[in-house]
Length: 245
Image (cartoon, rainbow, N blue to C red):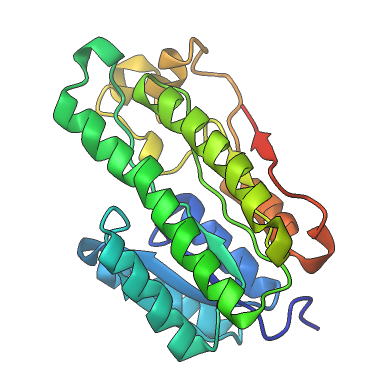
């Protein structure tokens, strides 16, 4: 029996990695799930839709660049129209720049912030507007972050955004939480230097000051955390920042 019948989630960056794991977990929880990613990943995203539908839930793929506000607005409107509303927004999409800050160009910085911070804000804003319109009783927004150079800034900025918005949306019974999963073995953690640094994920561990053998997180475990925060019984949890390393 599904735990969350007739509820709808959007998961951004859902073509692979953590976003994929979250989308499938929410489907297993009984949610209908709209999955988002960029057009270049449309084939992968359609595969995710098929997996969700095989679990007996409704699913649609929505191509959009979350750094562009009009595309986020259209995504939210399309999902609400096709699936009947929005109850959970998982603002998971993000990019990685595995460089020290002094080697990060201004263009790379701006691109990272446009997705990892501004894109999250757009997802929060337009999902919240839809939730208020439909009188949502509970919902949640999340963002995956790590701790390298520009990421540190985006991480703390999203944390502040989450806490501020949780206060603003409390009157509408909408919860807003963030998760920072640390090192997760997804394509985001891949680096060309892994072959010389000790294998898959070794470069990002090195940048964290960790040995290649240091244990890393599992996307299924993080998906379980997101699932818990998205449940109606977590209505009293808001403005929190769950960090794992």
